Image (cartoon, rainbow, N blue to C red; front, side, top):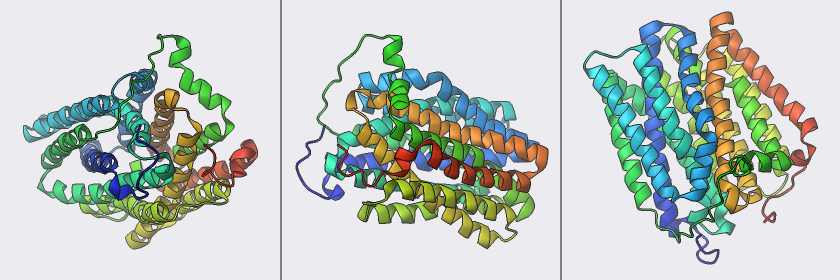
Length: 408
């Protein structure tokens, strides 16, 4: 791992710079893909339930592969695992591009490609998170987490807007661009140079496979942080229904969907930049819960809004609150987890993150099919707010965390 001594600025760490670029390129591809897939499948079927199926088909490989992904991240060169995942993503979107260009696209093919991409991400996401602490000294980890999250959110601002604009030229053009971005991400990953210390290879056993779950269950701070995000986003997720709001309520084209999807990330990027420069040092636990409560309120306001401009502003606030929670929770997770189990713990965390997002999308699609888009979003926001209140009682130790700087 990188020595803890050295420069105090992230700009002086080339491994982190390449890590940041790889993360941006990969996330740009995923965000552009989300716009293209969402608009294309809704145009094909006009069913909210099918928007939910996209989330479900991304989640299924994650739950099937979580234990294997964590074990591989702990036992093998993490850069090779990430590159293989990124190149698999490139192959998946290449199939979508070709099928669309040849007029052979269908709902079933889109869902199959989404499943493959979900499998690739099941390996890429936890391994990326596991690699991060090796790119910077320990004392810079809180800033690195914020900057890394900003990379993700930067891509979530540019990607949807860019994807919506490129969709004017056709979905095949969007998919082809995503393929190029996945290849670039793989190249940047290959340029990350760190002092590689091969991890101790424990014999494969049920104890080894379930080490991540066991660690999380035994650490109330980590368990509380992970499950808080899981249930708040699972119940309050709104992104899957944005094609309905863009098409039916605000009556815009793909560009409107791109703006709506970019808005949460815009608020998150601004927040991430601030937190990378001025991280929270006190009342960390309370701030996490306040941020999640604001997230729930923002979702409810979005559900009731009939103005595109107001909705974009509210979604930006939603993204800012979510980013605040993410940075603080991820820092606690990284500092509380020993390196020898970090891959498996991050794999479980990634499963929960994917579950909250993709299963949240599925829940939103089902609820919208039953009750309508607006009631579904309104109920989701109220539930997310309720989770923030309930978790204060369930995990008081997390609520009382004052500072994470001296935890390790």
